[in-house]
Amino acid sequence: MFLLNGKRIIVTGASRGIGFGISKILARHGALLYLTSLSPNRLEKAVQKIEQDPDTRGKVVGYTAADLSKPGNGSRIVKEALESMNGLDGIVYVPPPPPQGFFDELTLEDWKHSSQVLIHSAIEIVKTALDSLKESARLHRNPGIVFVTSIAAWEPDPVITTSSALRIALHGLTQVLARDLGRYGIRVNAIVPGYILTDRLMSLAAKRMPDNPERYLDSLRGKIPLGRIGTTEDMGYAALFLLSDLSSYINGAIIPVDGGLHRKTI
Image (cartoon, rainbow, N blue to C red):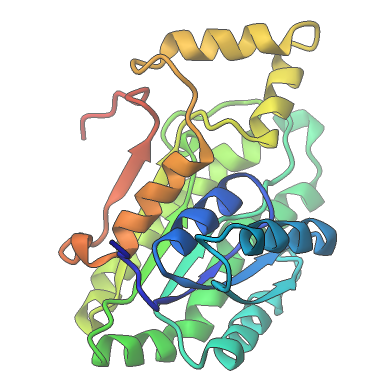
């Protein structure tokens, strides 16, 4: 069963980690993808992997490297995607990882960079794509936007100061856009990864426990009710659901994908 048969979707941060995991799952369910990432080499390798899989071959319509810390690149991505796909039905915004560090280790430039990649580029992309998403809604294609945020928005961590302070803005944007764009039939939701096995998590483990990163990962597993660290495919299935017709009445949701780690009740 192809839940996204022919839906045209942009995925940012698609060359590795969560963005790549989401891209694979969407492609397996029939989506047509336009992928972007910072590194041209990693992006080409990611596209090759998707093309080598018989279940996803031909699903990447186009791709381009783009530095989302630079204003204007978000708009460029959307314009190039529209040329390649002749329309747009969805966006998955996976922000580039902002600089890690404690407050006194970070510069003002680090804060400006983080603000650009975590919130301003998301706004730029949605602004540029809005008319095409409205057209998708008029054609009853159930367009959707999914923002990937972080559990740091709920549980701030001083090791990732900028992420903790700024990702909460993406939660606010999710709620505002859901209420504003819902009148056009455009749904906006967010997924909140807990501990997902990525290069980013391994880097955090090395920073937390340089002598034994694996011990740090074991300590995380002990905190998670399901007893395991999540996979990028877990994130992919959450995005798949939110972009499919199965979630046609879900709008403004901020959904944790964390194995039960987060204990927020309101």
